[in-house]
Image (cartoon, rainbow, N blue to C red; front, side, top):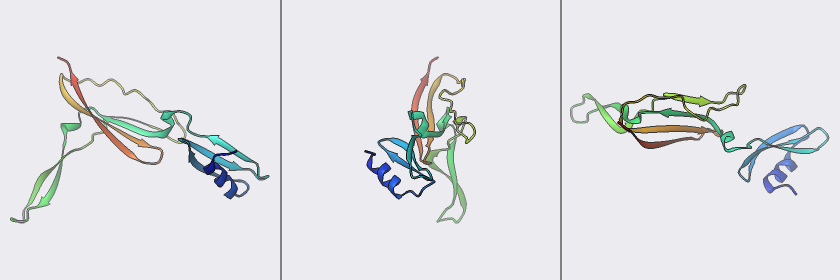
Length: 140
């Protein structure tokens, strides 16, 4: 017996068609050939198959996010820090249609001793964007 999502998708497919479903934490391509024979192909075999792109900012707090706003009292334009920082894409790895490989280790990055906030940004295969900020202390 096929899982529910695959079963209902297969039942609604026309001959010679296919659909992508998510079932049990896997992405599966369900196909029905011209004779009505149903096949399923698991597209996500390991956790890295879910990632399309990831990048690193090795010193996230190095560039403040500044916006220009109009001062209500004076009417003058002024620059104001939003309280956030700009993500600078210093290293990245991403998939293309021709090359599905993804580097899982950044290149070497030299930095001076001190405390840093490293930001890692990940975009999954659905386009969801997530960022994690990690405190790092580099020895003297």
